[in-house]
Image 1 (tube, rainbow, N blue to C red):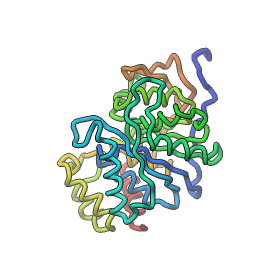
Image 2: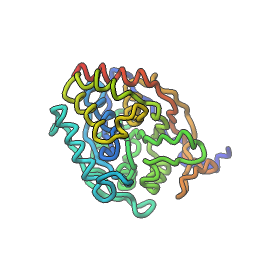
Image 3: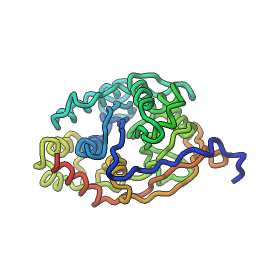
Image 4: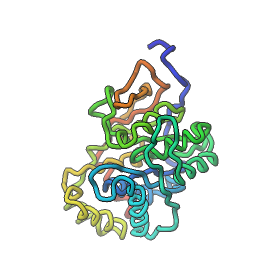
Length: 302
């Protein structure tokens, strides 16, 4: 590929620090949309040895689920507090309202969550960066980068995309189509990026969480009981996608990954590899059994 097609070809490729190093962390999550966000955040709460959790941002989502659309951010925030309370941790970590979808490409949708990410990124450094894990539409994280592009070097962004079945042609995935302007902004930015392109295979039977997860502690009970709030959540083949991002950050050997070019993306979610923006790490597979064993063992130590 000719170098004339490259922009920011020195874009840093993130590397997960050694196991004995704590990661400064912000979670940007559409908690109100799906059950997998709860399990993902629970793994973080059970891993204070690994994560220095600075705060959680409630993200927007837009579908037919209750609370979607304009109320989705408030729903995500409210359910985040409910999750934290189940672990006796409500009030220990700040929770912020995130951004509504970007109205125009290249212009931020400002929010308290985006301002929080900017502030935390300014406290970080390239040597000790802020890890921002995006588990929903990337409106807030993209807005933070648009509000202050200089923070990109202090951030390591993990973007949960799960578009493996369409890679490398398109990114037809809920977190991307939820705010296409934001996803395009993330790809065009200088932020070191992990494209987390897997997680569908993270499944566990309902009977198993009832028998083994619920008795662990109050958080384990909350996680299992939440499966009863929607018939789909109780399905044995229900995916717990987002948990994989934090399994990876705790133990990168649980995944398969590759270094690939960062494509640009058009408004129809088609990738353009003729105009790329440096390189990124793409995670494309994860070990199901090791992921669940990690969650259970860490919850037992809380």
